[in-house]
Image (cartoon, rainbow, N blue to C red; front, side, top):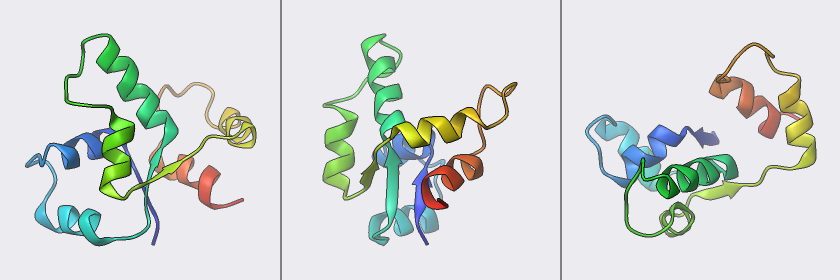
Length: 103
């Protein structure tokens, strides 16, 4: 089953944070269908530039080195996202996954 990781999960995995249980860490280490959205890389880059996040190197490099696949955002994805809840500030990961994995 393909997994699209939330930004927090990516950061916790890279930092080997205790917020991720060992079963989750093991799955992220061995599963071949782990995706990180381009939006996550963008979000982290902005936070790093603003000094809200620190870390060595770019998230894009870390993601590439981890073996995770970067999921691009197309114009079709952006259009589909505009149909999600217009009063929500944060979409559920399930809603976002439908856009990418259920054409």
